[in-house]
Length: 444
Image 1: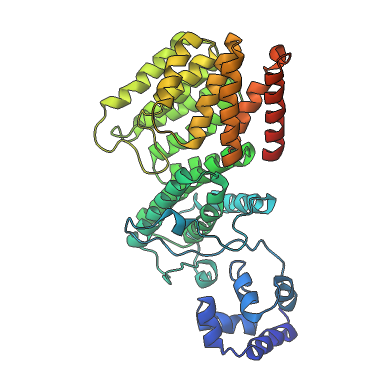
Image 2: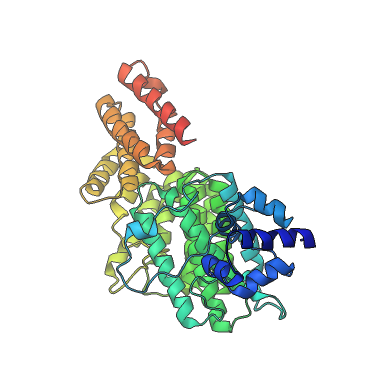
């Protein structure tokens, strides 16, 4: 930043009637930070630039030109740790922020940048001294020393974000909040920490990268989701969190299951099963792994191995106490009927599938899960050449996909569409085919 440009920044502040203290208070930074900006010691971080431009009543482009700095994505905004009470509402967490509803390439590139940073940082036990941590770490609570209590607050917020994800009809709306929290955790990892705090931060990072992967997967961004799960596995390893690690590998393997690359998914699931055996045996991790393995066996046409895996997974009901977390591990056995149905559909066993899927529909399901079950029932109609069942269930699933924007349901409908050719002589099937085509164009 040249002396002339520093002068312009100070002059603009004065023209707006702010003292250095007043501008610092408005931006929620220390006065010394404003002093360094105007003296050329530091540049405003990307998260602070939109706020600074707004305070000075100039555009972001004008600000970056004034400062003579490179333009970065402007979507990183520090957030305050959530209160530790249970009174945080869904609406509080998804309150609209400027630009936060956009889910575009810039957002994904920003996430990938954070993953690249985290991949290096989680493998380090600390960062060298002499770094200006005030520039790098921006905890909204004003803390400059991270302790166990602060880490616990971040863990609480992670749990809230998973709940928002579960409650949101449109999953991508959770993404800006997740990205912001990832920025905070990555900044915390840049600080020298004690071993225990470092491990906890790695586990929290692994937790949140899995959530980011779930959002991306639901939006059909499989490559980015795989990156997230890879980073989650790396961070879990550094945090000595075997159950987290196993879940990251299971989610990564499920991408292969979903794309019908069953042979490739198998080795990842074997690794996940081994990690789960080293984890907390009170948790349901190993049973969830067996459920996904069952889908792999179904895809390979192995009915016996599939049923054995599902029977093993059913033993989750023998566990007592808190068998899953509020976030990254949510398997309690309640999904087994729909999982069984999906497996039997893949095995082309409608006699076994229909009862399981109807059992799944008899309980309260999220919109995405209901759409998935309805698509499976439509596939059964296709296998039986029952046009009424095919059209009715697929139409209901398409309505859910339109309402939620779920890439998962759209992808299942698209897979179903590829099998409609023998029945396209029926006008109802042709109409369904056109409906799915229009839906996938919108979702794409």
